[in-house]
Image (cartoon, rainbow, N blue to C red; front, top):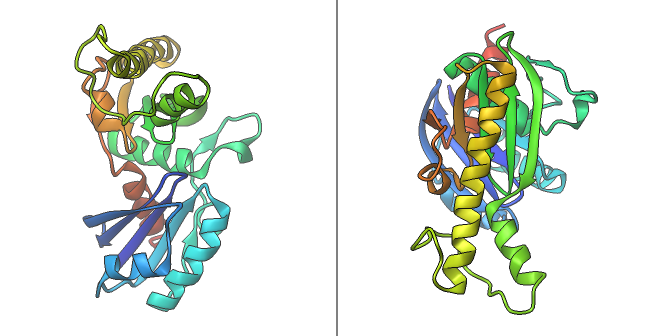
Length: 247
C-alpha cells in the first residue's frame, strides 16, 4: 500500500509518501504559493493508492482534494471527517482543537508513550499535553518565531526585517543580533520553563517531543527536549489511516 499523507499548515504544506507504514520521501510546498503545477512535478510518477489529509487551512483543503483526486483517481480521506483521532479530548469545547494538534498528540502517544508533551514550532508555537492516562489535556498557543520577528519589524519604526537564523552572541552587539538573541534565547527559555511547570502537573517523567518547521533551530538552545521528530504529523496521519483500515 502506497499512502500519501498531507499536512496543510499556514506556512507550508508537507507531503509524505509511505510504503505500508514506512516513510520513504517527503517534500514541502509553500501554502500561499500552492498550485497543481507545483505539485505535479514533486509527485513525479509516484504510485498513490490512497491519501490522507490534515488541514488547518480550509480553502486549501478543497483545492488539494480536487487536485489529488485528479492526479491519483483517489478521493482523499480528511482527518476529522473521514477519520477521527481516537484520543480522549478533555478540551472544554473539543471541536476547537486543531486537527494537527490531535494528530501530533496521537502520534507522540503511540511512539513515545505517556505522559508526553508535544511542542510544535511552526507558524504558531503550540504545546500539547497528554496525561499518564492517555488523555489530551490541552496546552498553550503562542506566536511563532517568524511571526514574532515580523511583528517587531511591522510594529516599530526602526527595527529591520531580518531572516530567522542563529544569533552570533547571547548578548547581541548590533540590532539584528539583538533581535535574534531575544527571539531564540527568549523562546528557548520560555520552552524550558513551561515544560518544567507542565511536568509538575503531569509527572516529571513526561517525555518531551518537538516538531515543526523551526524545531531543529530552536532545539539547540533548549535543555528540556528528549526527541526531535520533524515528521511527527505525517507519521501520525499514516498511523491513523492504517489503524482505521485494519479495524
